[in-house]
Length: 433
Image (cartoon, rainbow, N blue to C red; front, side, top):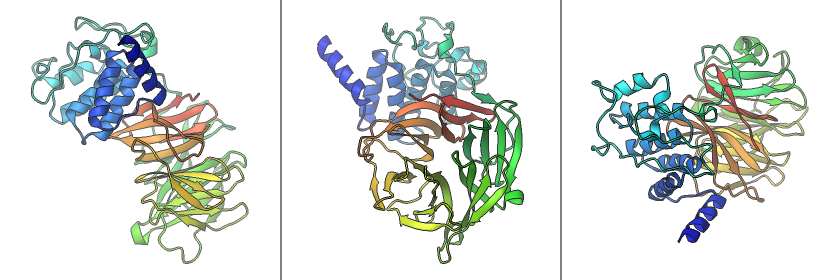
């Protein structure tokens, strides 16, 4: 039986440990925890939450365990707070799975919410409170990344590898109403950060960490709301989409700015008769063609090199697009309400990307080495995920969760990896293989 178990485990690892429904995902998550494979436990716990009913405290506790055991104690603490906010009182005061969570500076504050008279809370197994299984003994292969179990409530020292990676860039957070996007200028070593409702762009300097205003409605002619932007690194331009109104009254414009200065170079309005239009994201192909996606009628527009107006390319059979990226001069990928769509620009044909998972809720999308990388909103959190695709580009392999944030966030791809705004005043880097 041990040989059979090992074979099954290897096959599951090779296939990315897919799961069909809540029960299957949870069973596989528990199995991963039992064998000490905490990264897989974390991935499968997220999938269980995604497939389960919204705000299920039992599934949220499963995820909190997975976060704690996979070296993500801050995420686990936030998840425990959410369970408490829903009326639950998880028992983690002596649970060895949460030893690293109890080391956090905010632990006493959060623990007091479990039980006003103490930090312990009700006994495991009480109605509505899941019973956490005993911590498995990590195998030799996983001991470097797995949290050490403890038989007492005394916290065990956390290894340096288990601590959250320091931000790639820290800065004084500006007052933001809603983040509209993040881009990176490799040449000048600056990030461009957008604020949606105030319709302005800011620059964050990598060297000085200073934040300065870059462009706004007053200086660049943006409409009421800034909805997306992208850097053209080959030509040193920044293309920005802005919008006004909603539904049948919506209108949008693309603005071309000089990246180094923020000076407006041109505007590309829609052609006469385009109707209601609300551009929500921008992508640039290597040949310099700029594409933008419309949320109102799911239409794809472009501005060819040298052109000065938006030209309609096609209409997608997908509702409410949210993000867009270019794989090359011939292929785009669009994230929409029901999933991902591949657009063949040569034939103007589209195909839904098939997947065993729900691939929805994307707020950022990028392309790298036959994979999509982006920020996906799941169960009130934001996940940085990588989705490998097959050779046809129309079938997704199981996604990998690279990072998570409790704050609304966006990201951008660079040669170094994927940068994302993890919290106000902090940009983190996920390095990609």
